[in-house]
Image 1 (spheres, one colour):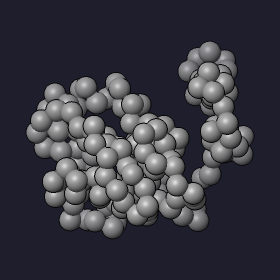
Image 2 (cartoon, helix red, strand yellow; image 1 turned 120 degrees about the vertical axis):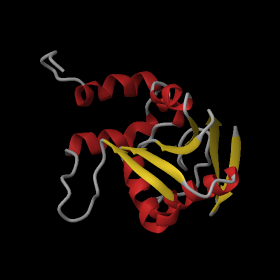
Image 3 (cartoon, rainbow, N blue to C red; image 1 turned 60 degrees about the vertical axis):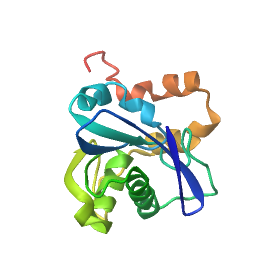
Length: 162
């Protein structure tokens, strides 16, 4: 477990495994603990570094909003703190957007870019439905149990087939 200071916030990160480095960036409102299924597999062959994005988990929660570019600079600060020049960068959901911005800002630091359930954004991007966006913006006021219940319709097919 480690903390790095970047642009007014302390950013939590930790590492597991040995080998070529893989930077793990999770999505909106989720901590690095959400890599609990993927990370052990990766850590068998790679040095994994997982971060809690600013505003989440063990990282600071400074006044927002936070730009994707700012969070990409947080990821660069983590690599600097770990003494890593280049890494495979794996981002999921909003973490994928941060990973894409990281690749744009720091192309020489990216060995490969792995993107999961994410989008490039921009004017032609398909936006999430309003109910999903509302859930994400009100999540901070919910208990974990309330959020788990509220997110179910967005994760599972109501017919029971998915």
